Length: 224
Image (tube, rainbow, N blue to C red):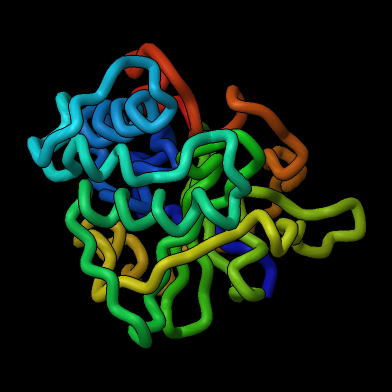
């Protein structure tokens, strides 16, 4: 199945990938991104974090001790990713549930404590994502490795992310506004015929994708 894009409305075109995966609500995109950026700052250790069970400054659920327990950016992605995804669930209101078939995914590169790219998969075998200035995409899921916003290769085949870079967690349900888009009728989707080589599969480093440090305002909608 070629990738399809959502044409029901354009309110998601400026949305970061993590905002779509964690909320899907354009009206709260800045608030969601601010908390995401704050969590990234704390995990990177840009400031001292107290050793206690108080909710971390700037967050709503994750505690200071939760931050302390997580592997740092010097640890392998295979160690960082599971803890990072659990913290994202805790902060943004997801309940982990094995066997649900509903997954939050993250692509982690070395040195990253939050995903470079976030997306979701659903039990009907589809993968869904977006990036800034792109629509929301859907296509048939291939082991969580082919999010549509990453684009297609020169041969027209899906770009496949490396299996040792992608990690997921099963949850009870997606955010209501994310699910709202996913459940729209087929008539609100169309085959994408634009240049599909605009993804970020080849980007590396802390400044790539949705993993960032610093001023959340400049990243509020326009970071992936």
